[in-house]
Length: 282
Image (cartoon, rainbow, N blue to C red; front, side, top):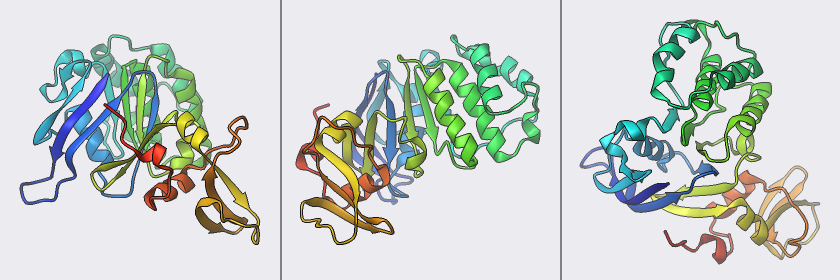
């Protein structure tokens, strides 16, 4: 569905490359978590995918089309919710009247339901909302747009704790199985339960690109009381409760929740098993 092929990108001729000969593929019907430290290019990658930025070399193709051409058939099948944005000083009704026509499968019922779930009135005025409320309004529109590809950059920033829970609920409820969501975030615990695939970036390269199922089959995360041996651990992180550890999963028939922050630290330290970090064919 979405192919990134040997791209190179930097912000200026003398600036360091954020991506250099970088390739990645996203398949339809999955929810991807795009993780990485500040400056690794997560937001940049979303803007490149949407065609708002252009690679200096290489190509990004979505549904067979080069995204930098910004063809109508491409734009109507993707929607980007950036981390920071402004909305026009109009009512939601007016905003929908002006923009919904660009998305052939726009669903007004989904929009009403999402707004209701976020405790927003359908006759709200976008110019009078707080940043958190604006984000909830735009995410509601994005889910209602019905695009094949949905991109979200730090979607839970600015949301209070109840709203983060509602965010997970509306995504799970209204994102159809034929749609793909790519979420770039530092708040991994906010979205961990939604993800079925994890992509981690480190210095212009793929650190991890695996399904949650593959990761869970290879490793498990647990907390061991202080004093309990950790010799078998791939990675150890001290905590108040004891030692949080990542170990090889020798009990594949049991379910263990993945602790994404711990997994990320393990990957950053280069401690994941080789079968998870080796490059997959594109």
